[in-house]
Length: 150
Image (cartoon, rainbow, N blue to C red):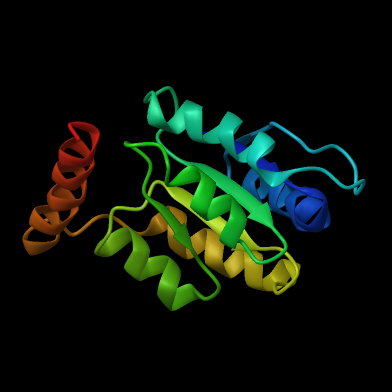
């Protein structure tokens, strides 16, 4: 699978480690920046990956900043993106099983490469359960449509 990925300066080191892990797991990362630890504005990079997932060009993406919050907030402005701030294996699994998350947002300052690998393995290997969860995810999209009509 091709996985678009981006970070800001605070997530740069974690992004570089994540790209290597993605490759080790048999996937291909496509790096949308940033390409150094120099200070940048996270929305500029989150938007690039969110557009790819929102349009359906890629089924999922990964965003990393210091806390993961800013990237996640930005990505979730796109109607077809379901970004999840993930900081543990359990949250990774639940975000896929129950929320059908298609954007993994990581707190780069909080995770080491071993934790990132465990989270990535869980997130990529976990399937959406559907059923009652499908109804709930559909309500998110219905809400987006209602707000757009205002």
